[in-house]
Amino acid sequence: MTKEAKDAGAMESNRVIIFDTTLRDGEQSPGASMNLDEKLRLADMLAGMGVDVIEAGFPIASPGDFEAVEAIAKSVTGATICGLARAGAKDIERAAEALRPAERKRIHTFISTSALHMKYKLQMEPDDVYQAVIDSVTLARKFTDDVEWSCEDGTRTEPDFMARCVEAAIKAGATTVNIPDTVGYSAPEEFGAIIARLFERVPNIDKAIISTHCHNDLGLAVANSLAGVVNGARQVECTINGMGERAGNAALEEIVMALRTRQDLLPYTTNIDTTQITRASRMVSAITGFQVQNNKAIVGANAFAHEAGIHQDGILKNAQTYEIMTPESVGLAESKLVIGKHSGRHAFRKKLEELGIDLAADALDDAFRRMKALADKKKEIYDEDIVALVDEEVRDNDQVKVVSLQVVCGTNGPQTADLTLEVDGAEMSHKSEGAGPVDATFHAIRAMVPNTAVLQLYQVHAVTKGTDAQAEVTVRLMEDGKLVTGLGADTDTMVASARAYVNALNKLLASRDKQAPEALTA
Ligand code: KIV
Ligand code: ZN
Image 1 (cartoon, rainbow, N blue to C red):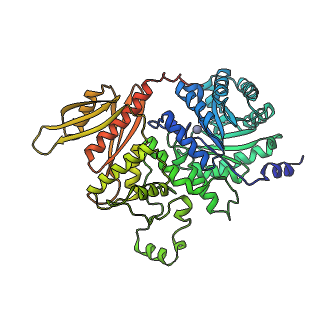
Image 2: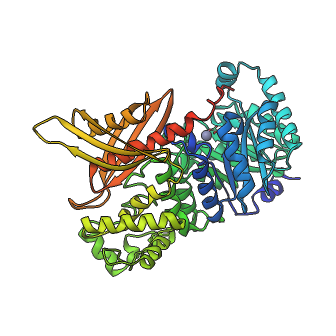
Image 3: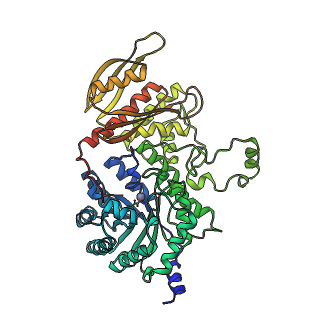
């Protein structure tokens, strides 16, 4: 086969497979852990929005990861469910076991191929790594026909060695070959050339889909991924809101909207229903407690806001003057439904539907009651208020709940907090003093739910404008090396603070029940 024919074969389809790794690489963001129920909800939503492959976790990493991959494999349909495994037999067998119930399953096995990683991290000779590539892919193929192989630290790998390993992986049965920019070091031209070079050098390249997995350490993850696509990659690995290790991964919403918006330059398609993007972003943010920065592309609060008078004037005359995509295309429809004091349950449910929020009957009742209470305190209820309020309703299985809080604060101390919690279904109260009302509140929580967690972050921001705005508080706690993030919202900053602390604490309590993950060194 001539090179031209090969290239034409591998690149004939312009459909880009979207591989979402929010549940695996995304969950590796320090403080972004999710519980089983949250992972299931997220996986369901990803499948519903048209993600082709969901990387559900790293089954050998911990019993919790195994359980999550298995549960997703059992219940989520419509997408291929993938589990990550290092090159060893134990990892691959564990991944295969977790994936057994899946309708469509993929084992994703990886090993480092850069000289640096092979020498210092793996302490293996290149020939042994090469053999491990063959052995791992061959073993994975015994469990499924859909095997992905990744060369970790691909962009710092010596090109000839990469080409040899890719050829061997495909020969051993890999159907997808993924080229990670593990440390986010590459630049678009260079990354594109790495992919192009594989098409030139690897004789059996047409037997596999080439994939990108770019980290965002230099803010180039999306640009690098797109350069990969232009040069023949037909799978992009990405995460909602760009979650992931360190500076994160390429953001799914940015990749998909760039492809959709710049069809003139990037004539590729995906299977994603883009109107689900805002909902997905909000769900990930609510579950992980990671707020999206206001100016974040596509899903930031300001992404479609026009402040400057000259822009507003242009928009009113013709939206295209300053809008390259419509808010509706990402599911940000301008709402005609105003929720307030006099709104009924039906209107509230309709509003939730508009916002892409689906609540069970109990949670809906609770959210409705809280919305009414909020409407008594606050004149205008914005969509953001409802999202913040509902975020807390989806925390069904919490061991600890805030029942009531009364604080005394001001210039004449002592500042005190009188707090009632529900712990495992039983109410208990405690009054504490502190250096300010937040400190007193957190002391009271610690008195009732003893823990050794260290507060890493306490942050308050107003959900909307006005002095009656809800405060959204983020609390990050660290206990025994485990970092968790909690969110809480209320018009009363102290109540929001208590809720955020308790939310983080619930995550710690849930993770305490699980065995600590094995050290993953290879
Ligand atoms: O960044 C990376 O190299 C990875 C691999 C496991 C694909 O996440
Ligand atoms: Zn990664």
